[in-house]
Length: 241
Image (tube, rainbow, N blue to C red; front, side):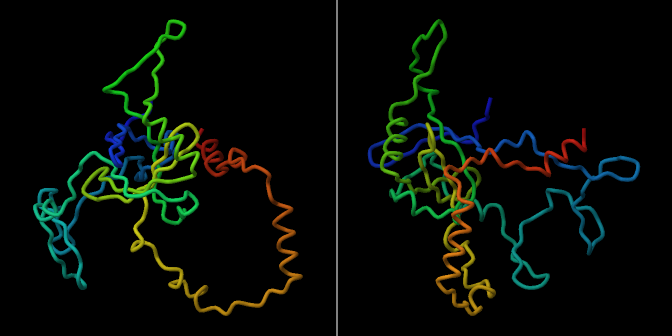
């Protein structure tokens, strides 16, 4: 059973759709290593002050922003609380865009959006078992976004104090939420000197035709991502076993 990471609602106009968020990534098969000493004992990490040469207790630790080498502005917890964005448990939709305008470059993380039927559990009996009926407002939003090939852009405070820019789009039978990077977080292409400062060579029509031919020969009719596997992880699992 998947665990809910956030509950709230999608809000736009007079519409309010109760929803739950779930992670899209299955981490149950991830491999992680612990660091051990030569006797096989797990290594622990301590907060250490190299100036006073002592371990520092968690209660003593403050947050500091470095303004020059070894010079910091200390930011107190109460100051951070003053500027924290209030969590309203609402994904506030600001606008709708054509889905193709959503550049994957801006996508940070993805989550499944499920209807929250905690308050309303409309059920019907099917062969003696209880089958949940999906929220109609949720189903309508899925259908409209899918038919119109639109994505919703909004803001929400998920966890902590940060306000996330998000996009919502239809995916198969449900909805997916993408947290997005703000434009100010994206490094401009011009910062890559090998691209911005390099002279672009001339490509003649014969070379273009050859390039198109190579692409066409490797073009799949339908993209099936299940044909690709993480070979390293599979070999790692064999090694550990």
